[in-house]
Length: 220
Image (tube, rainbow, N blue to C red; front, side, top):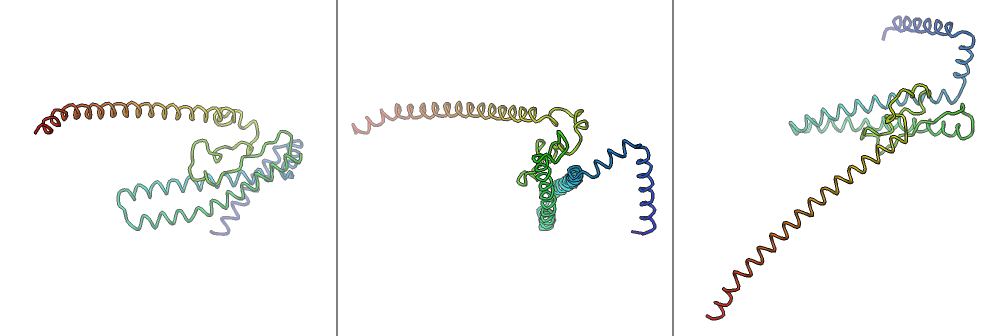
């Protein structure tokens, strides 16, 4: 990296920052410094940055694993396994980020509990390490509740921003899976009944046909 280029970018960013600060006005600057000096908001911004990095790393890992799995299905060789092991070794870095993120979540929860956070503040949900790499649609990694202002999430769909709706969706999915399993069990029961009837008929036929043979054998 060339130092003059970096310095030029830094000057541009500083100039843009000063311009934005001037546009805020007196009240805006007062609110800005109040937010900047708040430990809760600092930790929330740090958590938001960590969450962004975690999501980026998880997406990259998912794409790499998918490519490796497709290649492995086409040609099973040691090279694919070596690449896959290399990707898996990077999981430790993601787990470190998640632990830091969970520590920030706990710190924000403690500040809310001790009333050292702004009114109506909400702490983000910590990430579960066991569910980290599944990337299901309802995983906490996609839930940004507590990382943004309330007004930023009001336009979000209820399935993404409302916990009760999310619980209801999980309940409906669980009921659907139970109905599917019940239907499968009924089909298995019907198949088992047909099999039993068929076997019983075969045995009855065999006994009937063999009865005369037994009598003839005994007469002989």
